[in-house]
Amino acid sequence: MEGDFIHDAELDTVLIKVASRCNINCSYCYVYNMGDDNWTRMEKFMSPEIILEVAKSLQQLARRQTKAFSIVLHGGEPFLLGEKKLEFLLGTLRNALPEEFPISIQTNGILITEKILDICSTYHTSVAVSLDGPEEVNDKYRVSHKNTGTYHQVLKGIELLKAHNDSTFLNAGLLAVIDVESDPGEVYNFFRGMAPASVDFLYKDGNHTNLPTGKSSIASVEYGKWMVGLLESYLQDPDPLPIRILDDMLKVLLGGVVSKEGMGITDFGIIIIDTDGTIMKNDTLKSSYNGADKFTKPVNIKDGNLLEFLASDTFQEYRKMQKPTSWQCLECPLLNICGGGMILHRWKKENGFNNPSVYCSDQIYLIENMKEIIAKQLQNANIG
Image (tube, rainbow, N blue to C red; front, side, top):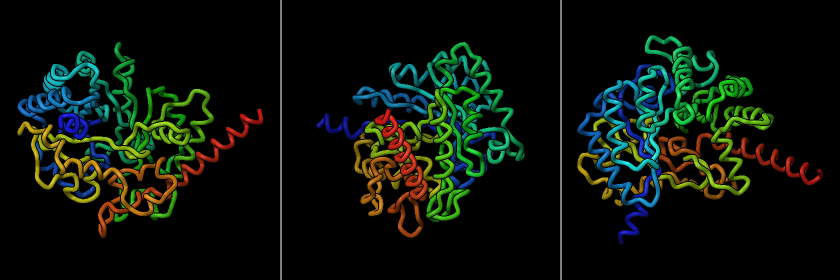
């Protein structure tokens, strides 16, 4: 019985919403600009009382799991907490969890200071920064509340991060959202020049009912073509940037196992804890419809029953949502590579999530190009 419970309850990632507001206003943001309004009713910051309850519950979970899970601090903008609240948060989590449980922060980088980085270093917490590319690419969407660009402010934060004496650990890499109107080779070379630990590229949020920006139809391949352009620069580089989406897809094509949700046949256990302690589904579901990330019967971390909730049918049903259900996906020979994509990309008003990803055609285009490149390289190796 206990063994079954441990298996069912295992999580890979706990994403903690420590701030419900943000100091910038990215036009593509799923939290504020895609129809969901839950943030307006949330506490602005996670209170000390909720932080203590989160730490207590995660400590209980850590004692029961057979593997470590990752903690990601998110927002809004996490560094809006300020130094004192951040130190209390990180100190509380670190005191509750073994050192091998990684803690990271996803930030827009603007509020990074030496003191904040010192706090992160003290409590062994890495920092990942969002930046979409060169100034003209980044400032197209990642703007302030006054609609001004954020590029130069972000770069200052990144420079502080790179200059810190613990930068080898602290600097966890960059997160970029794709703009299909940009030049993928130029974007790759820009990031290559920054020498980050890694770059993770994301497709813009969208679905069958509300197409992602830059995608003209369900059958179009704008994102697939952009990714092939990125792949070409990546493969031409003798010392390529670590790019998780490309690394994982190539790994699966060569018989390996992926590390990214929405790629390959995966079963990642992910929960979100909102600023008031409410346990939520993956927060990217907000882009599907208002309230899509809520469980029918709300559970709060302060109730002290996280382990019970993770073993419940409710959580198991949510976890099963990761796996595609549409016949197109289940009969597709490429399913083991793309995994059916992210849940939010499958949404359609008429039939919910029972659809292929809105990026299905893009993924097929990218995978077929990858397979062709690998075949040519193997052929050349055999000839040689």
